Length: 287
Image 1 (cartoon, rainbow, N blue to C red):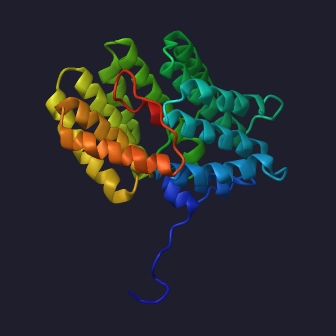
Image 2 (image 1 turned 30 degrees about the vertical axis):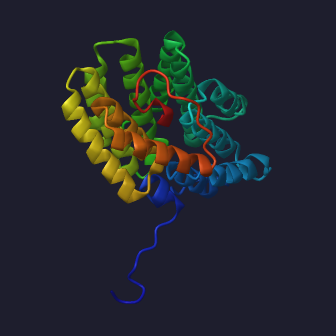
């Protein structure tokens, strides 16, 4: 390869699969870096950046909100849904007096979806549904949420609709709603044009969970194994852990259970303080 041809990706490409949007506010690049670190299981490093952003008066309010919601997601990934509500609630409250633009809307929707995932994790299905409805209303008001790779503002557009579809699918799974399969299919359709391979992979994991819930455990197990391999190759430790947890549960495989334990220990050493799993092995921790 000729000198100068090698492309080096940056925080935006690593976190979201796209270049930084022209409208990105102050601090957004560092937020993207924290998102990528969290996706790789480096929770302590991600929290350090988030703390810096939240305490820096130069950081745009929308980015402060997004950073708080990201910190909440790291807490939720460790199974601490009730604790995550503190940061998700703060992420919503800091926007109370902000003008509505694409970034404050994105931050507001991220916080609402995070709160919905928190509510789901503590069994408040009605609260989760109401929060998702509020998020969907915000998206409709701005005409966003369904954009794909052709939209330069995917981070504040299609990504939000996909996240909402993830949590709505998981709500259906947890509450025994027969629409879970259809909702998972809708999420998969939205993910097809997503520029981020991580978002496509997580969607596949949620589809696998819906497949397992429908009674086709072996098909789901095969898919979970594929996803685990993809995540291992990409260094996406939290999603690999979720996929292997699902696989171990579906196949009652001691070897997979050992891999889950090893991954959990590795993630804990990087700052992710787990609580024991309860209930399903779907990926609600990663919403």
